[in-house]
Each structure stands twice: as structure tokens, then as C-alpha cells.
Length: 255
Ligand code: 13P
Image 1: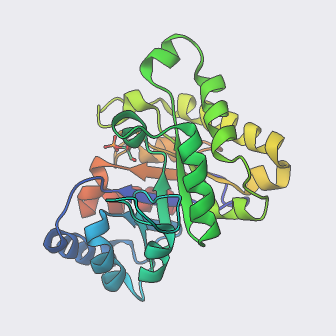
Image 2: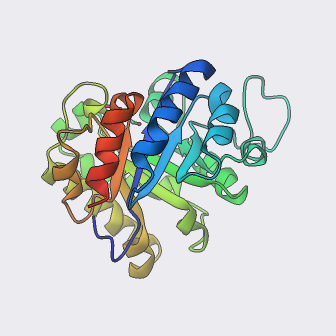
């Protein structure tokens, strides 16, 4: 982290976990544990939990995010949710382009780009996910692939709107597997992302960009990952479902 240059943000991605009842219990447990955080704290919850999460976190330092949104403003898109539906509820963040959406729901770099633009135009802060599969790493194309994902996703996003973007580097082979990228591996790819953004915009914009690492980040490995200069936070899956674990990561980012 380089807190002089940019904000550290720890975000939980709950994925398809927690009913409203469970959401209430988890957020109530989390609020006192993270109240003194010296970093941004976000929980990205299922659509059905958003209202509960927004209401419970009012007046606290916890922000609420969704895990996806559609790129059209409205219309015949059964099962989809628009960006303005989220902002009207008080949702401030949205995860876009998570690898699970790319793998299981046909998300492409092109649709990620459309969703990113719709979300920032609606006033949301986007947590844009990029990351390579194991086969890409084995083929030595991680840097090129992540640079390409970043470039396509940010197409048409103005420099002003870049302040509403966080990029999460999530190597797909590290998600939910217990295999974390080493701190050096994470930092190296986060630096590639920053260099890509510098080429697209400029150094000031790239220096100000928060870049998270995600993939089996937990209370035990967070401090080491966050000690790296280009790792500005984390996007946490499994460990965000337990308040003490998530709070420990927030604490590591608050140092
Ligand atoms: P895990 O922390 O469970 O590996 O998940 C990471 C992730 O996909 C967050 O978006």
C-alpha cells in the first residue's frame, strides 16, 4: 500500500451467500469490529440483501456494493438489475467482471466494458476484476492478458470517471482454492495494471488508482500482501463471511 498516494480499500465479496437474516447478523457483528478502520470498508452482497445492508450500515464507515449490474438503463432484460436501481437504494459500489461471471455467465471483456461505463455514469464506484487462468500463467501470458482486460474494460472511460474505479487483480487459480499468489506475484501484476493505466491516462491518474488483490486472501496472509507498494487492498471472498476474519484483514490494511 502507498497511503500517501491512494486509498486502501478492503471489500468483501459475499458471492451467493447469506439470506437477509444472516446478513443482519454478520453486519451487526462487523460494525463495531471495523469502526476505527483507516481504510475503506465495503461489503458486496447479493441483490436480495442490499436493502438490509444499506439500512444497517447507515451512519457507519461500511459501504455497500452489489456484485453486478446490467449495462442498459431499463427494458426487456429478464433477471437483470440496472445501475440506477442500485444507486436509488443507496448502494455505492458494484463489482464488475468477476471471473465467476466470466466463467459461468458468458461475461466478456466487451460486456464488462459496457457495464463499467453504465455503472460509473450512474455514479457507482466500480470494483473491476481482472485476472489470468492457470493456463495463462503457465503459458507466460499473464501480463499481456491482464493488460488487455484492463484496456478493454476501461475503453471510453474518461480520466474524471477513473476516480470511480478500483481494479481488483484476481488470479483465477487463487480464488477459493486456498492457493494465494505470493506477495511478489501479486505486486508484479498490480504494477502491470498500474503501468497499463498510466499509458491509457497519465501518471497522476495511475498513481491515484486503488488496485486490490483478491484470491484466498485471509487474516494470515493479508499483512504481507498489503506490505507491497502496488497492492492497495483486497477483494475478499471466503474470509469476508466471518466477521473476525474480515475485521483482521481490515486491521492489517489500517496499519
Ligand atoms: P476467495 O477469497 O474465497 O478466494 O475469493 C476471492 C474472490 O473471488 C473475491 O472476489
